[in-house]
Length: 424
Image (cartoon, one colour):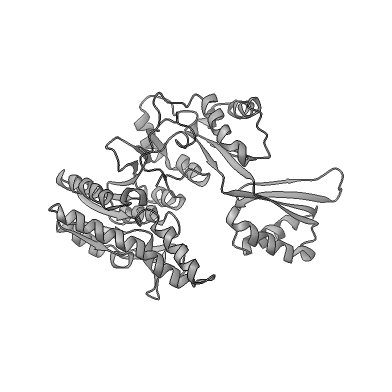
């Protein structure tokens, strides 16, 4: 007998029929002799609909009230799923994040987990019943409901898997696992059998949407095995485990050089020109950006030959942060001593990821040669031990994904299937 935490995304519970299908899977798992805890997202586009509804009422909704509003989506799906499971003959009880014992800090809209006390959940599964938990939400010290931000249901599932010492946390979506590229862009993408936490973190942080970054970080910290699979089929998915477990999975074979390709078109680029070329100037600029609450990905600095004594700094950040960041930098222009702030919203990032890159020379050359052959220009480059990333024009990104995917022989024999259409 195993304890399994199963997380179902919005596309898996998009309507009544989908909820009944998910309920049957949960019941089948229970009847196979396992204890089951299910974590569920809001149905389909419910969260987006609630955000739009709030925007129709006020231009600046309170963060506290927004959390109260948005958690309604998961409350609906958890209650319906519990009803559906019970209707199949297995007692099930629904719990909000607060009832389940997920405690957070006071950062409304993007709260961090500070503790999980799953007493009611543990009692439920000890009584051979199924616990259904609303994902994405918790409670803070003021007894206010909070949300964990986008992808928070993944983090909820992993947090309860760690607290309950579950044997596995299954993450269900509308694709059969993690693929070598987004199957909506590269139809020949191949499903990956197993990944390390490290590889998955790089993929999640550079555009792969199948798993949320915070969930992978949490799983790595507490060594929670993840099984990413589809709620629309019964195929084996992708296992995300520590490196030693990955090595056992691969047997005597070397880990593949390249695990996959990620892309992200939700980024933009800001360039600051005429920055004083002296110690501390860059630090002051990035402190200003940090104070604005913006997260930076890639950074490039150079000294133009025609402007001695100055530097040009370019960096990428989420496109949603651009206006705020430009506004803050412009307000500090005189104090920071730079010349101009320029923004470019038409960029995307392509990333090549794989632990095998550590011991195989020539990967970078092959990557850049493939892009050059396709006539794709590179704006910025960033690397880590297991990743190469390039900033390209947004219009070139999908072509670049397919080009590099083929260059590294990642194409599979069968066309990848996307059952629901959203990837969650």
